[in-house]
Length: 184
Image 1 (cartoon, rainbow, N blue to C red):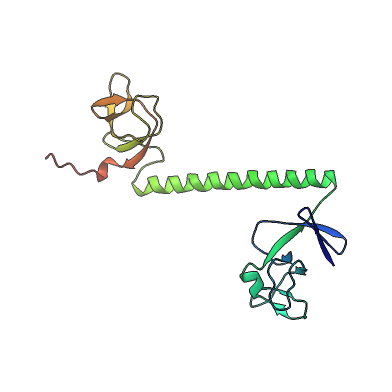
Image 2: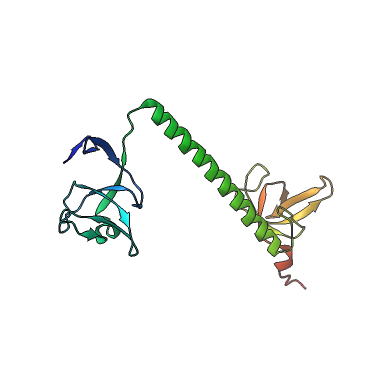
């Protein structure tokens, strides 16, 4: 028997809560839509075979479609033990940290690949590159498109736009090698 109270599902003496994610093999799921021998509120164990994810309905038959159609939602055990919750939180934080590291590495690799395609090292800018400003501390508004020029006085690349030359953080829009000079 399954009972609901305050978003908690009690099934065979254990407490569960619905979670917002895709159903996976081994999950417990709760039916949210009646379908044949599938009763709303009943809990089922998800399994997998050569066709895909399924569960055994109230009539003893395998049911694949309710999973595919979203008629069941995954549930997870509610942990009442403080130590277990702290442990789960620490594990989740560690996983998040690892995913953030992987994302940063993937972005670095993607960035290096983009620069390599134009024959440059990451962050290598040249005079004549078309850039977009990323901050407004130099004088041009954020998002201003300009051309990089060398400033002999400051000995660094600066952004020229609208007749003004300012220092900025910027990102490459087009390398100088791809710019067509129609002035002749």
